Length: 102
Image 1 (tube, helix red, strand yellow):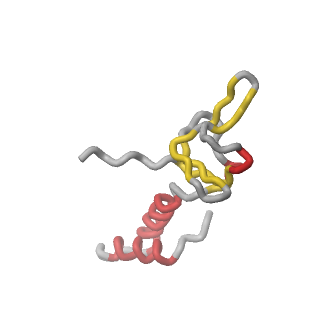
Image 2 (tube, helix red, strand yellow):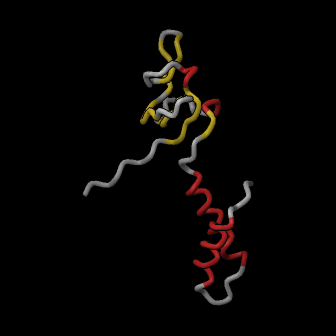
Image 3 (cartoon, rainbow, N blue to C red):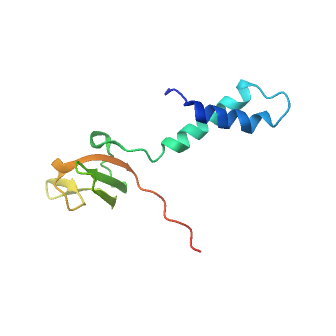
């Protein structure tokens, strides 16, 4: 499991310390949940990108971001749906949810 950063630990501890007798066993699960939420949309190596049709965001080696892309397999060919050659893609992240209607 990854190390939980100090800011996450402090936030979880503050949240739980408002309750009497809150100890580490109460606030550590909150810290883990906060860390997981923060890491949810972090960029990852393109080598780990899902190739099952999942909608994701892609980033090129020059920093151009392609939103809402997916892996395509068609007639023996396989490639990403974005306009860049696969060799220029370096990272991916889960696609961000759309904002709620106003």
